[in-house]
Image (tube, rainbow, N blue to C red):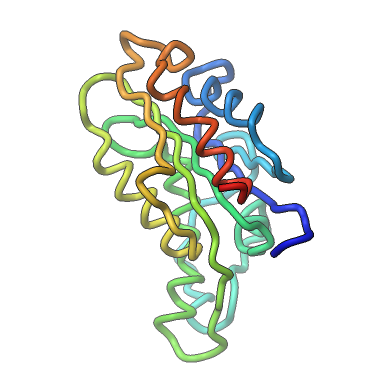
Length: 188
């Protein structure tokens, strides 16, 4: 992959402009050295899976929306940035995960196999101090698994006490951002 600019797809799973998740994303973007495409789970156009079962018989998904960007497999790294709501990822991010059904169906049913390129994954997660982020982490790993993106522990940045310490003031989380940016830009 030498010689061409790397591409990063960011899935922004937060509805709050100027919130904790966006504060960490803003810092990350300052350090990135790659082409960036950002999709908003809340403000983009991504429908949930309709369970039409078309993907069990035909390759791909029949819904025409922003998931095409995720399915395209034209990025080298992917980042999910999301808050934790009631112990899990926000609903619109869960819609994205539900739409991974065509990738599952391609493996489970006979037909044309889907082979996605190997990618690097990153995760930025924000939450209040209730210690309930385990389900969100597990679901994030599911998203990355189906997109053939490897998430290492060093590529997880979390700010988990935002009820008392805003992410923009979380020095521990902010200190991890430059390294995450370098790895997602394929510099490290």
